[in-house]
Amino acid sequence: MVQSMRETERKYAVPSSSDTSWLSDASWLSQLERVEGVAAVVDRGPEELDAVYYDTADLRLSGSSATLRCRTGGSDAGWHLKLPLPGDSREEIQAALTDTVPDTMLDLTVSRTRGARLTPVVRIRSTREVRHLVDAEGTLRAALNFDTVRAESLRAEGRRAAWNEVEVELAEGADPALLDAVDKKLRKKGIARAQSPSKLARALDETTTAASADRVDRSGDLVLNPGSAGEQVLTYVREQIRILTALDPAVRRDRPDSVHKMRVACRRLRSCLRSYRSVLDREVTDAIRAELKWLAGELGAERDQEVLMERLTHGVDVLPEKLVLGPVVARLQTWNVARGTESHQRTLDALGSRRYLTLLDSLATLVERPPLRAKAGKAAGKVMARAVLKEYDRLAERMTHALDLSPGPKRDVALHEARKAAKKVRYATEVARPAFGKPAKRLGRRVKAVQKVLGDHQDSVVARGTIRDLAVAAQTAGEAGFTWGLLYGTEQAVANAREQEVPAVWERASAPALRKRLRR
Image (cartoon, rainbow, N blue to C red; front, side, top):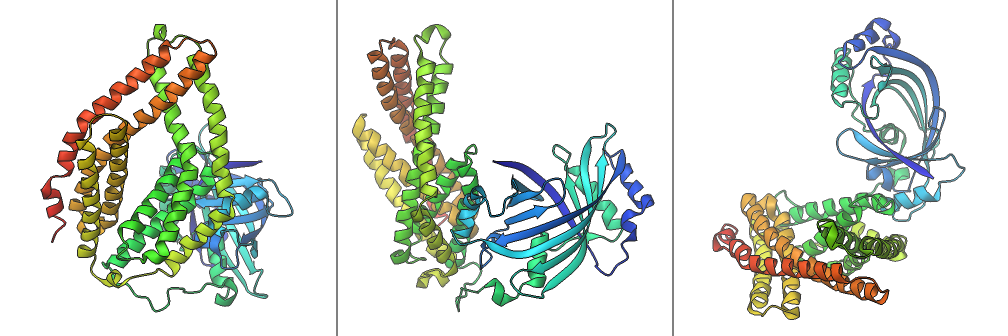
């Protein structure tokens, strides 16, 4: 059993040799009572905290800004996994105290550890003086912690470090502006923000030798100049890998929209590796693309079910009550539970497989030892323009083919293929934005409009197939089929409307001026 919370805090460095008596100076602490939203500073007494931090031999967790510790002392003893969030926040996932790393924590770190063994790396003990900043009702708004820290390496015998720091942690639901107000008070005392993002980061810097950390520069003699095609492509690839890795814990816990976002990251990576084969050697990347396609497919079952259920539910909800005949909603819910449970298990099975770990290793190797081709070192402009325009030509060919067909199943398939080509153009323009700016962004936006219309058309095609299956099941059970027929007809009308929109949005996306700006 785990629980999760959002932790928002700031750390401040205090010279270890300085006189820290001011930390308990009542006159200084009383100044915090003038901060808006704070009525009193309450002394909560000292705490003794003892934490052992775990990581892989090459520090894969800390390298991705995540930490895993087993802590005793304080009010929240147990296992704590902290995952990065934007700004001053992190997600803290807690589990009960056990002798070994809980299986749940192993699962939630696997996208970062890639299955490597977790062992103790640092022990950090802190003597903490706690002050609570409370409002007029006595509600906690923030905790002010004064920590005397002692760290020791559990890999390099005899390597220790000690320092003092101040930690300001925002209470749940408190206004983030409170952090800025306290920040001003601390700065007046000469206390500046800590350079290290966490106790672990500082402890590793001060106690861990390069050899014991096994932190090796794997880039070899490779040097890419800023503005080169290789530098821009690798920057994009690294970001998508980071996103994919970060989303893994959310997908395992069935967080809203996490499957969709992870699937999109897979698609963006696949598309980039395809579009920029002139930069990254396809003899290496084609195998990775195939595995990303597999993963996206496994995730797709769950995501497609989410989209379809939302669409069908909305279709029923907007109907007048008198037109909903029979147990339509109950049948939808039963169908969704059966399909949803199965598809989520399929996702979990994929993330728990050896194949997934192998893919993660391949992605790590891709950025550590990128298979660069000669054009990677060239200026990004011409290389990236050629890649974008090549994807555009494929899209134009598919659009022409689809629009030449008469309405019907063959045209539905052709429009779906055009939609996939539109995505590739859009993702190619994302990679090219640093080189081209607004021209790439404008083309991407126009193509996205095409993709959106074609996407709604394809969703209607899929929905009609499902509605028909549900109608057959309802009829077999002796239920009224009127509402299902109505839903089918509504989706058919939506598809017809989207087909009528396609020529206009394509005309805007295919304007020669959009591509001319990329030919320079």
